[in-house]
Image (cartoon, rainbow, N blue to C red; front, top):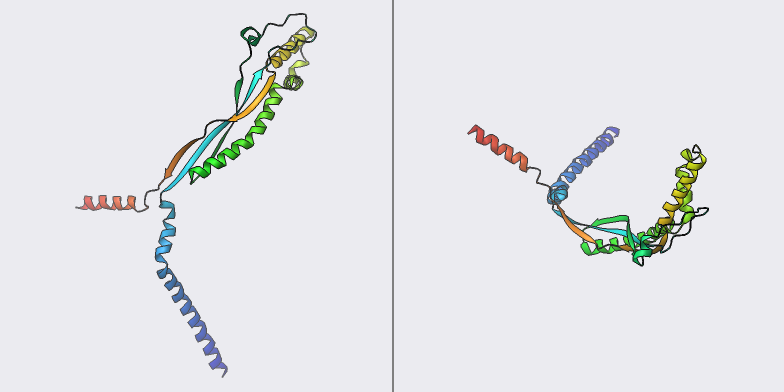
Length: 209
């Protein structure tokens, strides 16, 4: 009886393996077309839209520069005072780029991303053009290594040069702007994997003939 039960278990196990293998084979045969499509998916042509824009800020130089501290020299007239009101200047801040399958959706996403860059652009403008003390401190920090080794006269001349340079960069920040969005359609289509092999095979057949 024990032998009979052992033989039945062995037979059942064999049937499970047998039917399992047949099931896998049947599944592969039934879904052969689907599997081929999945395998060939990277070879299907795909079009992407790549859109790009640039964010910049606009600022206007001060009409009259502040007087230099502890200086007997008369400051030279700025170009804005002789030619009239200073014209706004535009400074590049950052390029923004995105891509996707639908151009309209890509444009909307890029517009949102560009708008998010406007506030940081204005903050950078204020640090650069509406912060005289910060500009001077930043320049002194960069010159800390060589400033202490200079004599009194050279140090005085350097201080005046730093103040003059920062004064020229002071003004009023007006706005941050995003340039016109430009999109390019990029198509990617990989050649069929068997093309090269077929061509090589054809060449070899031609040579044999």
